[in-house]
Image (cartoon, rainbow, N blue to C red):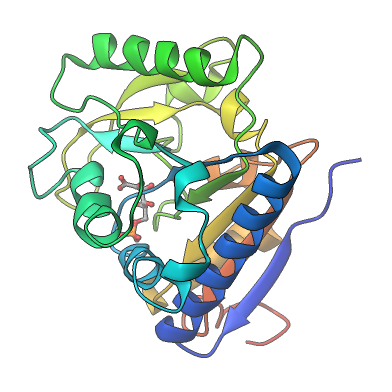
Length: 247
Ligand code: 6PG
């Protein structure tokens, strides 16, 4: 049976980032003890930078098994890696700048390439790392858009119907961000051992309520339900303030 999502609400954005960092370290430590490595797919956007900065600073920096950590991306915007819109750049500036991750453990999507080539290339990279089975990430860190998108899986997009490919190009207009994207697909997200949705801010409260309470809505974020993995929602009080139990 698919485990039920866990939901945790924290008083503010700082407490949210701190709790996410604690979970990241706990999952990393457990994965390394069990399998000798920790594979994680990261997201972009405005929310996760605080977490990445915390991880790269003490006390978390000393606790993470950096040499066994393998960084991937859940999605990328189709821009060069030094572009302000690049999800790689976000991680480079906030996490890689301060954490001793071996460069060969950093597996970025080629946002600067033609999207179809970049998607095929990343699928090859995933196959090289995980083998031929659907990649089983130890952790996929996701955000939530105000329209219910997650990674670069947008409502109504044909990418949601993908059953075979692991990485696909996507195109969507959202908040003046680069429209062309690359994204992991649902078969990959739903093979993960752990998925954390990290969501903050009052503008997310309404969509969080739908995502967690309206099973008929079928938002992209609701379709991330690994059959053999745990989904955890970490929210700040503003994002959680329309949930029935606390609102
Ligand atoms: C991206 C993301 C995307 C993001 C959501 C939430 O590249 O834009 O990976 O899925 O997580 O849009 O973004 P915010 O954290 O900015 O609200």
